[in-house]
Image 1 (tube, each protein chain N blue to C red):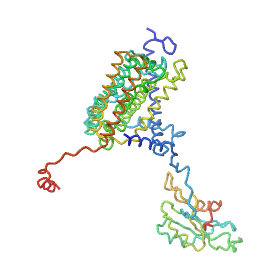
Image 2: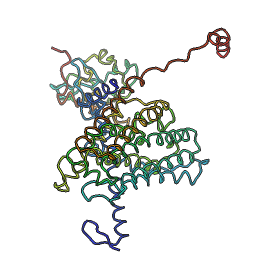
Image 3: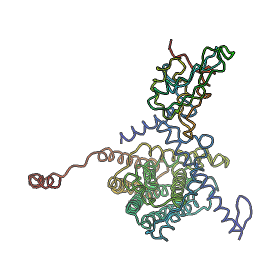
Image 4: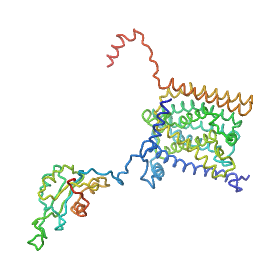
Length: 386
Length: 156
């Protein structure tokens, strides 16, 4: 019962513990870096400087914030449901860490190679919504409950385009194994032949991460922070940690699935260092895009959000899956297949753009009032109310 | 959609610009020529003593009562064996910069041109950790003109 960890023969349990420790340590550092990076980048987007006072160029700001959060009192409202309230952060936190198991950083640099890696990541990523609803319910707070239900509705709606986009890529790659998907991209990454799934994926991860413009579950102006209203100190920081860890992991997933992971454009022969640099660059670009969208877009209304998912993204993602499936079944020559897929995908993307151009942003037609409703009785009633 | 792309372009253009933030306590923006900040006392470089005689004129005129002045006999007076013509001279002087409203009245009432408004950044600085640090005593009030840090008041 021995395993191989970086070339050492090691007991299975010790191996598991070592890998777990590595993940937790890496995640904490990465999340601190992400928070610092987000503050700096968003500051630059607003012509500010961001944190500068703590340590050189403000580098220690996240450490200071973490210390402050850990030192804060962990308050639980008296009317809260104790078990649900206390356990909710773990239910948000643990699934995110479980996602890490299948994510490849470089060749043979993942926790485990899973044959259904893509499927596993998707399955685990949707578990954490249970934690959100637990937080909302356990807090015994109306804003928290509203926020949690919004989060649940949104996560379930956007899970489907996310799954569909990744499934269509899995069909093209002929495998759900993430390493195989990276390898199958060869010369050209998936984003070129499959632009529509990439668009769907990007929009869906914005919604899954509750980031602007899809941040209605945690919108301060409407539900004062959503499910986290009643949380403070270490528990609140666990939610925060989970959020940024999810951002990091989904960006890594997107880099592996759509941008060619560690292989493109250098190929698999280059050393481990180059592969890690490539992965980090691609994931960093995705994360930067998320921040960029965050500073640009205003928040959507909940009906706009749901309509966009169910009426636009989901049907078009079905078309893409169908086209990819047909190509898989009839197996035309490789270049014809690529052109076919790119054509379908590009047409789908154009369709999404067209729909967004023609429906989003236009005021909805007002219901025409009947003459009777518009005359005296209504007016007097409204005046009486005044 | 075009609007979305346009707005993304706008934010990216802003990202490429230089931040406008000044890291305030470390860097200050240049002061205008005729700027006036808080009052300070002037140093008579010829006789090596302050111009101020401690006559209380500014203290009485101050609308916010931010000044406290004490007078003493000048040990450097001619009758005492020195070379000064000032019979009396300032003993102690405090100005509370937290109270001062920079009205310039003390400068106008001074009979000896002994007080003036600071036109350097040190005269502007009110960011301190303790309000007591804003109460300036005589050596502090004299230090800047003594060191030659004050620009002439009449611009060319």
